[in-house]
Image 1 (tube, rainbow, N blue to C red):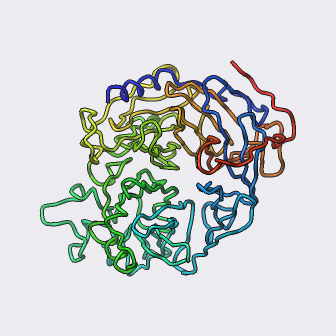
Image 2: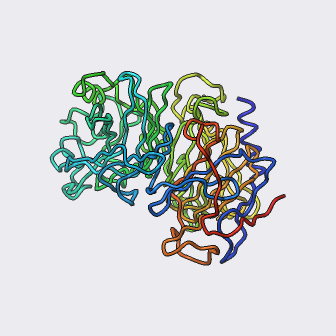
Image 3: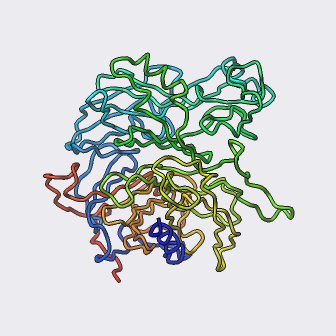
Length: 496
């Protein structure tokens, strides 16, 4: 753990400004490349209905006729939403390398709305591939009251929704489902079955979600979950809520092959409670919430670690720090005096001595350190969890800030690829925090632009971006001939 703690401090000290100077205009596409330090490969992203694969210079190697939140599969196919809107769509489409549709699925249940994220997995108990996706599930007012929701908070809970995770096989059959509704706890109505036990409080139930979160009653799109990932080794799922927490769920112990009904029942029971959660322990009574300070001009983040975050994922086997989780911490709703976004790496197994216990540790038990940003950032000291082992941010407070979207991916050489959605900004950084590759998306809402001027956020957004080496399964054996850049001009970029 010494190396991890040292790398965290080093990243804090050596964070490098990336596209951070204050300017109203600048070129798009590749603007910087340190050829000696990058993990060379092909960058994959989808924008406005087209998915691009570009080389390190930004030359297009391949495209697919789909592009909302595309996922490149090991066979070179692309799985994406069936509608060009990450916030809500009817189902999914899979196209092959040539762009032909080879699989599709639509959610036909009227009380389920797929949104934001999904992932193709190999289900070891079925011995085949399936697809997991997030869906907002409608919850009636009567169901809310039955779960102990306080009627004074919810205005009868009309249009209430709670996120669920659905698993569908390649034949379109739902084989497993898990939902937040089944894992609520409450201290409001003692007559309900999910009322806290005698002498207990919400703080005694970190594995369940408070049905009456202070200030956030159940409502439409209550948790707004926006990302999901699957750990093949652990047979576990992690799901992130934009409200400020991520949750790990046991898939393997709640899945019964050939018995969807039994699987759904297991997932709804105690075996489906959270194995781990991170982000805001005040939600379960084990931490301090953010607060506005006495003079009303400053605020404290309390023990809250993430806010408005996106793209939680495990670092896969074979990559540096495999098994840790990455997240793009947009830092919306984090109550910092000066906002900016962060790329974060989390190890849920660390205890207060920063030792790896081999099992999940409740973050409050792991403790916190006081981070002093220093310099002229306009930032106050804040508490950082000891389970955050590395994070990156730009020295200029708003050099990297994305109020929505974004992604983080660990690369094979230890670098990290970061995508700041709202400005279409993709950055590769070293473990020490040096930005070694920068790319600005030229595909804007109204044109393909060679030069980006002062525009509203999301003008040239990229929801996520990924990097693949030519030897990795999706690209192995493919003909990867670079053509022109997206704008058609010759690459022009700075090198060290």
